[in-house]
Image (cartoon, rainbow over all chains, first blue to last red; front, side, top):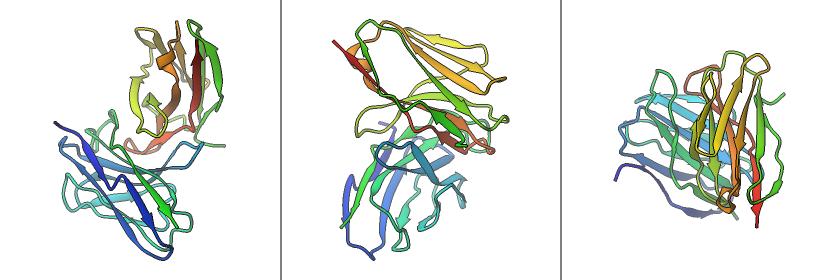
Length: 115
Length: 110
């Protein structure tokens, strides 16, 4: 079945460690996104990519890095520079690419806890 | 001012009630508007897009007011299964820069 897959679902990390969250989609979508959600808050955009080998910073990119070497993959690295990394991370994709935006399809999320 | 603002609620309503949510946005150039639903500890899922002329899908009606820069969602004949958080989504300056409101929490009670 077509969809978007995030892994791991739950992750625990010690302070000072980098961690990479995986996001893979087989929907042939051009655009991919990473959002962060904290309790009682809406989704905040970390990075997005409209096309392979291109990505743009969102509102809260500091302490995060991404790559888009393949159309289907958009991994997010949470670096030790991110001061408050504990959160629910959501990856999404859409078919719009550089044209008008369409529906966002989300993965099930990755819940990161820093100990 | 936040780019997308919603009343956080919670809205607690009895089954069968009609409930309405509003969402205001700050970017007058925004062209795309959506309502998403998010269940507790789950990912958001598209409920409906919002078109300029307004649109209806069963018990749900969405409307756009460009002059006042808000969108609304009306739910008629509320069901227990409608209990969720409803997220307003508006595009930012870039067509792929989608901005979310903080969500409005709805609880429908028997």
